[in-house]
Length: 196
Image (cartoon, rainbow, N blue to C red; front, side):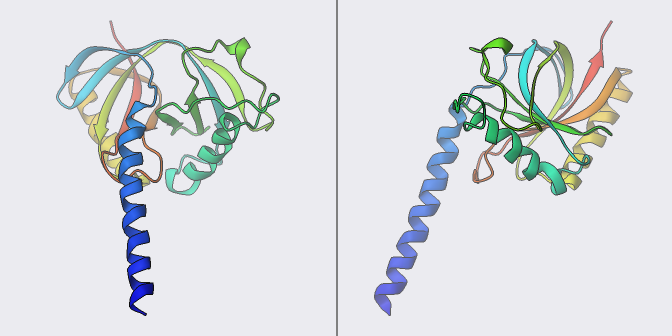
């Protein structure tokens, strides 16, 4: 009986250490280049370049209800669910448009042009180009939920209103970690802004 307890405990310790190691190594994942134009309180105004993305539609804007399904759909594309069975490197963040027509997308690695990417096997995935835009972004840690996203959306909205900054479109949720990352988690809420 003692041997079973020690083996079980050893397995748990190995798994925890593995999760921690993976959490640290995932920080090498490619992220989009952007330029910080200005910082206002906890908000950064960032200029993002054009980006090629793999995008899927969601049933609604609930992160809790549809975040996992959206993630699996587009992850299937980069893990080989395409006409060439080609694996494409994971990037961060995963972006969820929180509007009435909710979508989720992965940014494709910088090395690819749209025409270089294989066609998705799933009709639920599209390869599209997101145009350059300026986003107002607020960052927070921990695991996300609809409640946490809404809290930070309201905080971002209040700061932008106070500073008379006009917005366009829907709010975005940007998640930077794999579901198994347990430390150093990074999340952001953003919206496009119109600057003079």
